[in-house]
Length: 229
Image 1 (tube, rainbow, N blue to C red):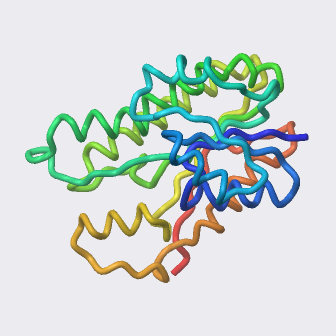
Image 2: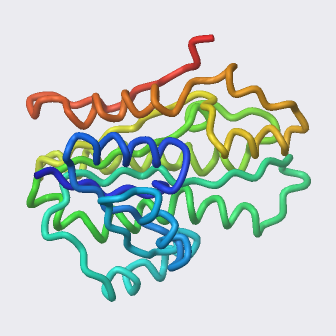
């Protein structure tokens, strides 16, 4: 049975991915930031197990995982969780830089490091759900784009390092997608939000599943997904 550990499974792309995997009989382990959120995710995703680890504090993830029961086998680690706070370089305070770099970049690196021994045994896969901002930075997006550019570099280096161990590494770059995060972005931009203008989470999840299900003689390294409207 295939086991997946997913961050960001509480909403948006991560939630849809977890449901799709559960529906086909796979094992899903979701990561929540605290006990209250873990309880909510467990209720929303019947059949999934939930562990607690605060991605905003990457340095404490090792301690958090050591206090919980992890599966003996993990076939994929899918990094979906992320935060975004817009602002010009002239205005964005250090605290918002630090938060976005912690959640979007340092925590994925640390969580991957901690789980690599298990992923190597299964010759598993690491999927980074990046962003179009990981390929291009626009005005007002400096901190978020920097964290996502860094995530691309992390994935590229990891892919080269882990090829010998048979661990596949994929980066997915969704364009604007109709998620609660996108709604928050529109609020920050001061724009009206119309979900119909953007790609659905289901469409992005289909690309993730394609990468996960690809036969072992190939891998998708980088895949960009854009709204079709």
